[in-house]
Length: 468
Image (cartoon, rainbow, N blue to C red; front, side, top):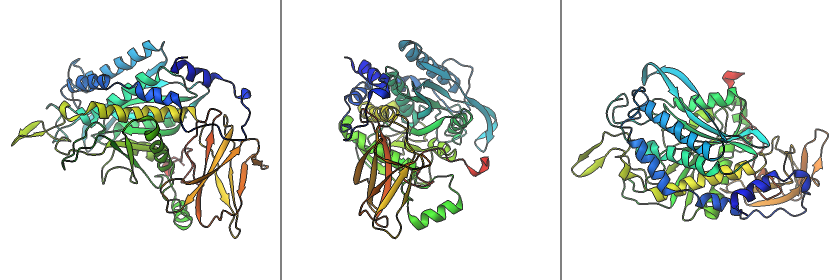
């Protein structure tokens, strides 16, 4: 059976056909994810970036009427690529172009910022959404220069190429959750494209489980001379942007500053690379973004959604935000030659695998809580998850970077309280000494990211104070 047909058949199997196993489903390796990783094409990525560079400039304030130059032409081309991919899968993608008009410090006149988005609807849990983003706009040294050539090959043609290629590969499959492939505009002028999409998600009730933002993911030669084609950095915020002062004070006392859903999402992705993508290592960076810099994932975080940012290991700052020129033999500017497409294919493959793995797994558990003060045991509670045949209850040393220990809990053996919550007591596991979490597991062994107890760990959207 072909890989796509096999995955579709497994997804379609009714839950009633599965009995909650006394032992956990095998989950060390899913061949379907390997097939997805291998389907990513370096040549297709190169074609996309070359086409984007060919629009001359994609500055947010550049012209929109031309069919060959500027942000308008680039947006229409991206939409045509999504349409072609959708045609190949029998119209499986819904294509939308959410937009808002903004003015600001870097947008002196009212300007429409438009995103181009393709949606692959989930088969059984369509409101649960996994998003991949990259930004279409480009710039040169002067942020307000909207006419000079701004190739934007790596920043962020590489991210846009990853989004389009992920759409091509994943559109051949069907998943329980919805996948969203988003090409944003306005990032360089103030993260406006991310704001547009995050606002659209809120308005339409999307339960965004993850935004995977890809920005500057194609270079392997850093300005410091380091060449690294085997490492990608993954940035993840520690404290949710939406926490109240009272919640921050509680975290300061009980711990959990490094266990936001974004951090546990990053840990989850980090475990996928060695299994499914050859010669790629994920370097987790416990920051929202690079030092005092930003990307479209920031707007998802501000809206209360989990989000992470992928960026190449070795940035070359002579290529970023620079006029195209040569000085004493040194190439400046973000040109096509600065992108390594076999490396970009690996980063794209990891994104596609992560989206598939998240969409195949049940939703992360809600209502995770712990108790056990002044005892030698710890009780962990959580709400049942539709589609989960069991759960893994995790614990680790408070200084450990990754989850260390776990216990398998079949769904039908967990204790059930009056409020329908499930629970298990870990004998002789002292609550004082460990951090705890829970992940949900499907019948075929796909597991959700681990959920840490409390408001900072919950994957459900945290409503910003401004919305209360």
